[in-house]
Length: 321
Image 1 (spheres, rainbow, N blue to C red):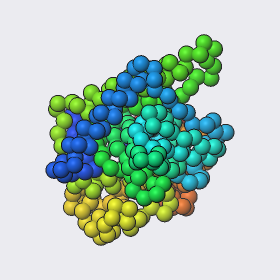
Image 2 (cartoon, one colour):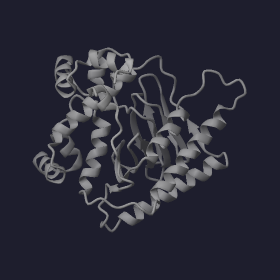
Image 3 (tube, one colour):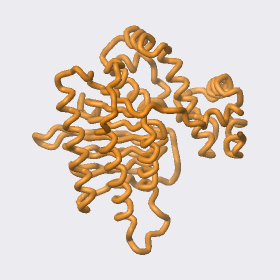
Image 4 (tube, rainbow, N blue to C red):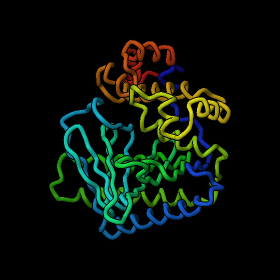
């Protein structure tokens, strides 16, 4: 079996496990968990009775990796609880108000600026799923205009792939909508995904991970900043409020791996997927994955996969096994 085929194999997953950004024994954890489920239930009812307004990003003329913000390879669903979020894109911006939802399409570069409204502080719930895991986090404003994770739950589960599919379909409007039914269809897809998320959050078989709470926050930070060329262990530690030495030691002790090696591996995994799915120039893929130098990216990619990015793309797109 080639390295291309091995990369696209889906690894076996445990039935369910939970990682919380706040330690399970933190006295505030049950309240945050309850709030997360209450918010989710409220938005499910809004979608079910047609009250949920789905805000769409402005149309973009093309895909770009250059500019402020970050992007993900899978759709994200933002549920605005209080205050508002202004999303800035390469072309245009939109503001999400309390009680509204925004479905962020895959690979769309965006930056987020948040604020409270009057006496109500900013708060939102962000849902993200891929073929391996579901993550839900409550966010708050940790400094003016900047959202940060307040409470996180992550569930590796086979159901995550179905949630990813429903959100992905909801993020792709049809080329034509002669009967004006897309809004209804999109809301139904989002409702289906939200209902599945709710079932998974309350699955009786879930277990709580013993992983330190700081590492749960770290994983989301890395996911959000993977495309930043200035991402370093020091900058991650600064955002998490600890030293780089402490963060590196904690990660190594808890996982048996070196943090920076894992970041590099995740960047290369993102690059492999982009190469297989997209026709962008190699240097654009490199930049999107946090490599400032195309030559360093090519060298790192070949060391990981045994193929240059060009050959990997050709084999992946040709379906070589």
